[in-house]
View 1 (spheres, helix red, strand yellow):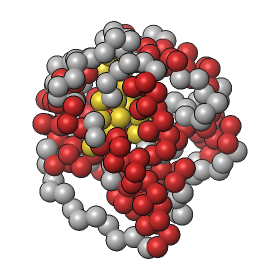
View 2: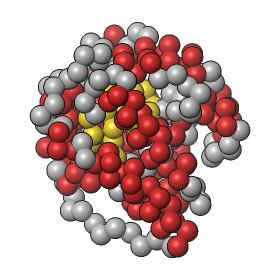
View 3: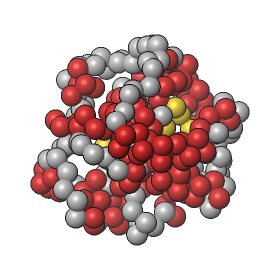
Length: 252
């Protein structure tokens, strides 16, 4: 099975990748379209050249990689994708070969976390517009029921959230998903030293009470408010996760 986790930045997406990497039956890949995104947009990000040197810069080559042989001959191939990397010039029909999951987080938390690593994020930077576009494509063009996971629920009760996710995509939960060694993962992208400091220090997912939403300045609050309608629409699918069955088109 190829599992595509579609997330914006600062959504606990790296922790989720580590959880799947800790499974005995799963290979993972970290943001394979990052170099393509930087090449096509001309944007400059931290560790720019290292990223460009580490990955294919052509979207068609990345798609072949995502649909190719699973690394290490594992039964499952977990792909951590950033939704803002998926430019409108990139074809989406290959998503029909994947089990597609959408990892969401309250915009205020995303903006506050992003600001700490790269200043003055815009709505385009945090991926909500692109994430909803992908969700609608999966729903309307592929006939798949969107599977949505909320990062806040993941933090509140990691085992319950991961059990529900595994059930929704049709695989058994493994307790090993809840822990990993500190210090990073062999699959980490070249950009990890800039972005992954906190998850490198972690040793797994443990239940933590939900904190109040962060206080934002006017500019950041405006970005969070712009993202809210997209978040709200995607959040509507949360309650369907435990009831949906995997739809046709997901690749075993």
